Amino acid sequence: MSNITKTARNTIAAALLAATATAALTGAAFADDYNRVVEIINDTNTTLTHLYVSNANAEYWGADDLREQVLEPGHSITLDIDDGFGECKFDFKGKFADGDESEKFDIDVCTISTFTFYGS
Image 1 (cartoon, rainbow, N blue to C red):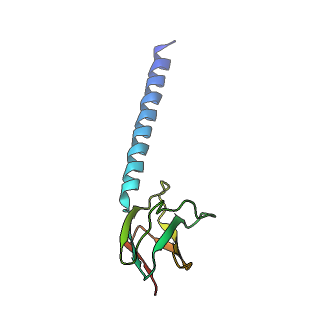
Image 2: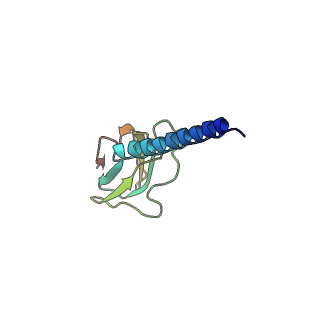
Image 3: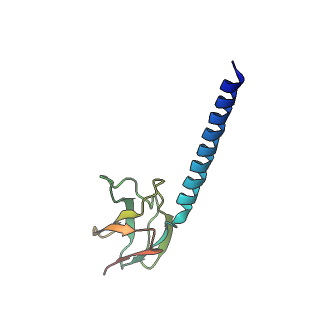
């Protein structure tokens, strides 16, 4: 193999390494640009038994974000609503012990720090 080929290969390898490092740093910076941590507040008189938060573009709600917990009236829980795709718009669905449900759509979690379920 000639020196020119080795030099070209080393130059290409260095360029690819630099591009990979730049992409990794840019991705990390993008991920940190927005704080998606949101305090969910139950300002109703009924226990919140299920909470679903999904990307606004998602077709299905997904898993219950409360898992095995409930959110009593007047209480709150803090969630990191980062789906790993850099999205900001999410839909919220709450199910309550009395059978009521509340759905709110296109909530921009990049610009809020609290989300409140209001009711009776």
